[in-house]
Structure formats: C-alpha cells, structure tokens
Image 1 (tube, rainbow, N blue to C red):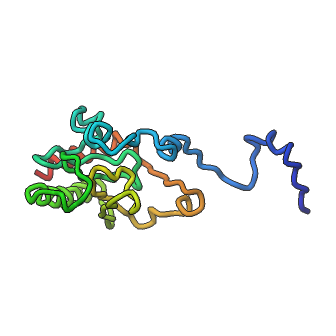
Image 2 (cartoon, rainbow, N blue to C red):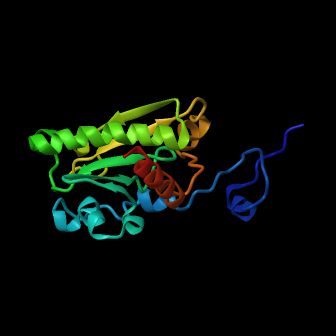
Image 3 (tube, rainbow, N blue to C red):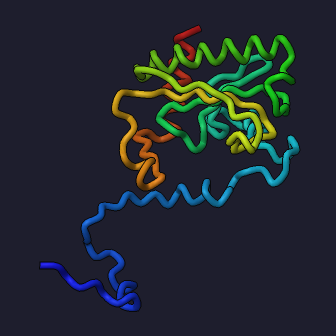
Length: 186
C-alpha cells in the first residue's frame, strides 16, 4: 500500500515528523558555508592565520610555534586531528617561501605526521596545499599546508550524499592531545 503524498501547502506542518530519512543536523556548518570568519580581503589585517599567533594557543588553536612557521588546528576539519602548517609571513604562494621557511615548513609537516601517529594512530594521511582560490583554497591569501589523518572506514556516505562530514572529536580536545604529543616528540 502506498500513501498519497501530501499537498505542498500541508508539508510545512510535518517538521519533526519521522519519515524514512535519518537526519544529521549540523547547523554549525552554516558558518563555514556562509563564509563566516573568512577574510573580507586578502590583506594580513583580515587574515585569520596572521591573527592566530597573537592569541593564546587555546584561542588560536595552535599546536606548535616554530621560528618561521606554526601549526594549528583547522577550524573546519576534514577529519579529527586535521592540522595546518603556516608560515608567519603573509604570503600566498609556496614559491614565496624563503629557504629557511621552506625547510621549517617541510620539517613541521613531517613532525605533524609523527605527532598525529603518536596521538591517534591513523592508517594514512592526505597532505596538500590548494594554491589560489580557483584551486580550492578557502583562505587563498595565506599559504597553508593541510595534514589530514585518515583511518580505514573514516569515509562514509555523509560527504557524498549530504555534503556533511562527521568529526567525532572536539577541536579543543584534539588540540590539547596533539600539543601534548608534540612535546613528547621533541
């Protein structure tokens, strides 16, 4: 037996009524979708990566501060423990790094992988940079490298069907865990 669909004007009264679809409500994602916190322009004054080092580690989600680069949590992570390696200088392209910055940038990327392995034991990583807005950089004006831990089975239908990523760990908990593991790695 099939049920007749309700007229469109009556469907609004069904909010909250169970149906065949499960829903994973993530209203906090609207901030990202609507561009909240994204720089108004490409200047260092508007850049969240330039602002982060001026905050406490907890407020700036910073895991490690180096000489020319630092490591912080991604505010909108692809996975638990998603780190970003950034130079302090407000530059947008990998080729703009000075030799010393490039060396530290690479060393911090490798160390981030070791730290994440120590802290949470992923089976692999996605490492990469999106150079320019057209290439997918959310904040194109400030160079940053993604270090994304991956586990067998961490991908499911949500990103494909619902464009939603379930992240099972709070940023502050992950930052504390990774900052402690960073100190152990030294």
